[in-house]
Image 1 (cartoon, rainbow, N blue to C red):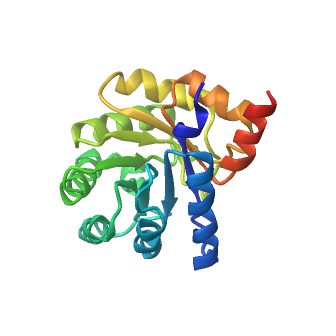
Image 2 (tube, rainbow, N blue to C red):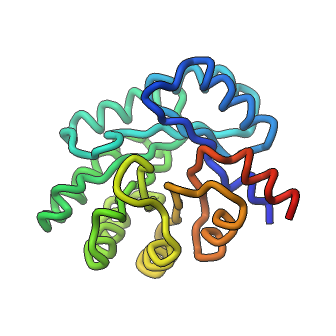
Length: 217
């Protein structure tokens, strides 16, 4: 299994410095990761550092709460794409989902998809805060709005990726979207289990450790 191409090497910490992002991108090149995932203020820097490589740039939007206005999410998305982002990881409006306002949730995602102008959008559900039915409805909303992926977690909220959620999301979206598992994936065994459960991508800040574990295995 070529696990490296499935990894989105991630640093979304509030204290991340430009030097930290330089290290992230350097490691992504060295280990042939599929992407780096950064906050929007670092997209331009990552774009410069990864020029000429096969590593994609994912940018988070509405992160980590998902509670900002839809127009703000769309504007951040457009700015990220203009700065060089290849993909967008948006946080769903979790409070609206908990309230059962699925029209709002779907429109929120759809406007980000439109602003992304053809670039893949991943919808972060924050599964640790949702019931099973809400997870299903959130996946359905993401597909209806044209998202390319559904994603488990921000890594900053309650809980992270779990096998049962990845399996549920996979069953729900079928072939209409892909799955990104994120949050708490820190070793090769966990990464391999997530992929076996149906994940297509892995969001993790432990990419180097995972690859070293894969080589040892």
